[in-house]
Amino acid sequence: MYSVATTLSHFSDSFAIMHETSLTEIPAYQSLQLHHANAQHWELRELFQNDPRRFEKFSLAAAGIFLDYSKNRLDEKTIELLTSLARGRGLESQRDAMFSGHKINTTEHRAVLHTALRAPRNTGLKVDGQDVPHDVHAVLSQIKSFTQRVRSGEWLGHTGKHITDIVNIGIGGSDLGPEMVCRALRSFAHPRLALHFVANVDGHDLDAVLAKVNAETTLFVIASKTFTTAETMMNAQSARAWFVKQASEAALPKHFVAVSTNTQAVTAFGIDPANMFQFWDWVGGRYSIWSAIGLPVALAVGFDHFSEFLAGAHAMDEHFRTAPLERNMPVLLALIGIWYRNFFNCPSISIAPYHQDLGQFAAYLQQLDMESNGKRVARDGSTLNVATGPVVWGDVGTNGQHAYFQLLHQGTDLIPVDFITALKPTHSLPGHHAALLANCFAQSEAFMKGKTADEVKEELQAQNVAAEEIERLVPHKTFPGNRPSNTLLLDQLTPGTLGALIALYEHKVFVQGVVWGVNSFDQWGVELGKVLAKNIQTELQGEAKPNAHDASTNGLIAKAKEALA
Ligand code: F6P
Image 1 (cartoon, rainbow, N blue to C red):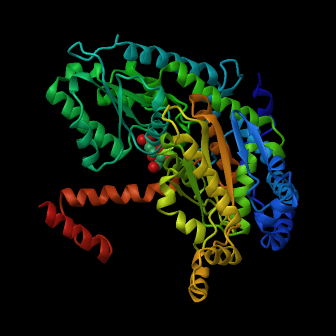
Image 2 (cartoon, rainbow, N blue to C red):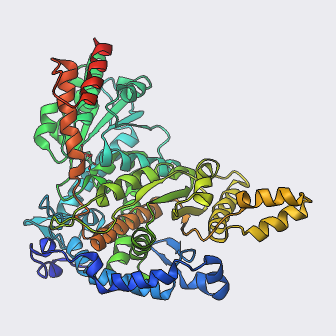
Image 3 (cartoon, helix red, strand yellow):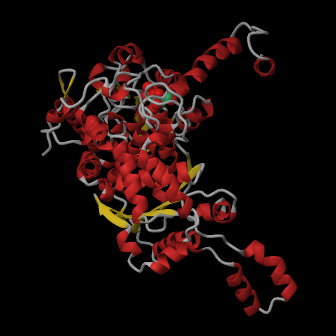
């Protein structure tokens, strides 16, 4: 068991806000630039031909996940330079600072302790005098007893019927995590409980869900860290009004529970504080699935599976905390990302889960990565002179193959891909899984090898195509190849492996933030739009202020007012 208390004293609050050395001034960065001058000409095909042990060398297993990173444009020297870059940025001490509860979120003066949410009860850790594991496990016990009551049928609706539908109302981290995980673990779900997620302020979202559920048998989970987020509050109030119309105010406690850090606002909304599941300001929204925000997951799959999910993440935490950087999976994933982003200038990365149940994984990673590292200033406020977070996007394979993979194979940008799959399915339909895995492995092979002009010619000649036609077709049918990818293999998609997978990406994002020198834990960029929306909403619903904005915004408001009148 580790104790983080001892490491705390090594850090002072000035640690994270001291003047940042520019990344480009680090000697390893300059060495990487020189190294890249050669590496950019390497061909993956040749790297494989020249080293029969490449797969063994550039792969590793941790916390139930196998990572093959051999199909990347790198060699041992690349890894050596990248890890020395990470060391030059103080990665190890910053990692320890995070685990220790140091306030590394310097613009919000907060610790960053999602790892404590999945740590064992006896992990010694205090933040502002508060015994963190004690508080975490108290809420876990509350989640356990509540979810057992709902799942067993002991918790009844106001007319004495079993709960059949759970509606989670939340947005961002209070939606994406529970929704993604509930879908990923749907083969473990309780057969009586249907899960619904409402995030969008667009009334079509809530309206469609309310049309499907029955007030007598529905439980609403209002999930909001702040309990002030405009979209969530509007949806919660509308759901409340819908419910009261069909039942009564008195029936509310049996049908509305809350997950929040804001007891006062929850109580003011009319939810019994006994039915409020607490979390803390040191849990960032996009890192909150491990907290009570995971309540819908525990309701769907049961507390034991939820515990396995936490344990899987903890196993990855332990690997990240203790493995040498050169054999550390999140560190390697992060540094490979830095290699492409900062040296090959890759604008985006694509996530390709070859597992239908991971259908929302790319959307989840979008918030995790882009809200964390979509930053243009360093922690000390200075403007960065290097590119930071890439655009993260993707969808499940094989569907993506028939949509946008064309651009990945033959487009003008180099876009690294993370393939994610499970060796064993959780269904029993014959043949499907071999077909799925074959496609996954074939795509990474095709990205790596491509198809040369000579190979295309040979193929067309064998089909007796006329010489002029061959000349015409060759450029179109040639694949440049040399397109990098990682492949992540889970044995099976289970609560434990899913937990480890999410934690892997969380730590990847952390490492990249450290290397870029940004605060990965604030999100000021979403504030401006929120404030402007409030003003415009007042104008749309009340008095027009014809010249309050620029000509475009004024014109759009005028059109909407006309339509809404
Ligand atoms: O959009 C910004 C954000 O603060 C996210 O980081 C967060 O996950 C989301 O809004 C929802 O916030 P809350 O849980 O407080 O409603």
